[in-house]
Amino acid sequence: MKETKRLLFISLLVALGIVLGTFESQIPLPIPVPGAKLGLSNMVVLVAIYTLGYREGFLIMIFKSIMLMLVTGAVSAFIFSANGALFSSVAMILSHKYLRKYLSPIGVSEIGSAFHNFGQIVAAIFILKSKTLISYLPYLLLMGIFTGYFVGLASYYISKNVSKHKEIRWRN
Image (cartoon, rainbow, N blue to C red):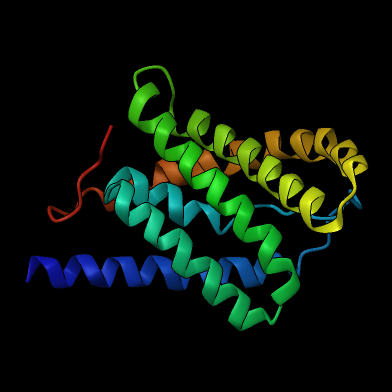
């Protein structure tokens, strides 16, 4: 029974990631920088890392990215966002694993935000074959400071409340 609840929670996090990702794609941003997003759907990955574990967080990132592509139909944007999500998830997992004594979920989220932006730029440089795209990185990183803070703060409160259930533990 415990494994069934765990799988249900993973499925709910993936579904929530899809809803948040679809919702955030409809929000106009004040800064017209290609690839800039609020990163709301990354909350589910961070919540999973803190409550379920690294493997589950990584799997949720994969499922969320694929399902968002299928739901939104943004196949060309998938390459950029999936690469950013991959960089971000690995960075958040490693920073949580090795630096959790020094970093709060906000710090882990900030690292994830920076690596997500870096991953998108790396994908864009390789696909579009233009090194000048690196000039977007400072703008993305600046915006990522604010969005990373919000995502980390929200993830902290969500994880703490979810961890009140005995099947799901806070992994600090």
